Length: 110
Image (tube, rainbow, N blue to C red):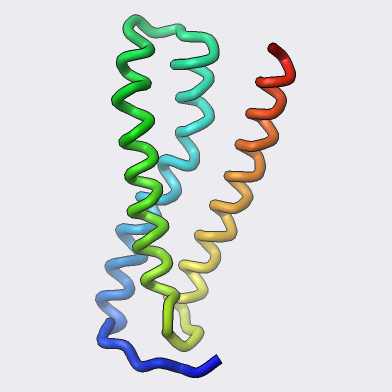
């Protein structure tokens, strides 16, 4: 794979990582508890209204975070920033895996 020079400096890529990683991780971690407590068994007053506002925001934050992480990785030599962004994406894959397993368990319960 050829190495492409990019105009993104180390500081710019570091800023993309430090903003993109929390934007990708927090919605990934909060999706399943929010789904259970707001949709499956609502335990809060106005749960459907909160869910209607919260879930699009979670999806938007996840997409923006993933986009920023991919911008850290794309067309750069393998360095520390790239390794950290790849590690964050691997953790997100694990989170997506256990979210899928728990969602399948919830659907199987009903």
